[in-house]
Length: 260
Image (tube, rainbow, N blue to C red; front, side, top):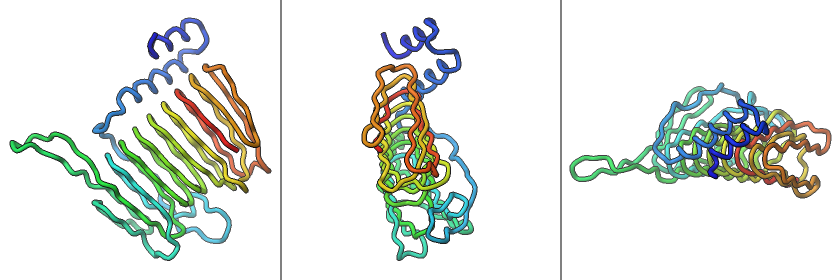
């Protein structure tokens, strides 16, 4: 029995409803169509202002570097000595007020007769000053972010590695998320249609985590250890400290490993 037949069987047996089946079918289509080269409009979000004070910044208080890429690898880190973002690699940079938009260039390979045979983007490295969040719109490839105060955006197919992140609002249609989070306030979200999410909460975080894994596996270790074997719908609710940061994690088809 393949995954599509399994979803149909669950629906016929009454274990999931029509809406849930639709979500699973959509996630399965995203997983099947996750090859590079599928283009779609980039998401546009609001602009912000620089952060101030010693407390964690909210999205509205940050200026933003918005990066769009079709393929390749994006590496982002923070350098407090900078006054503006520093970019290495093939990319077009445009300043818009306090924000920056970066579009990674795609190198297209051609046969001698001019036929396009494929494209790829080299690695683009970005260093952010303090007070800048990172917004990503990636079609396929790898995103590596370290130490940014807030990470948001969408990856259609690929891998997101996020280290020491102060805030998150990410949607991954098909792929993998490997994140270590340091959350202290505000609203946060991880939404994965198909794939694997490994999330580790750093010491000192103050949070409540709620979420659901549908048609997959769920495991928690550390301060809040749990493991459930029912693959149909697994919900969880974790509290650490006063719950000042509110994180929602949803995996529609795949697995979640949560370390607290």
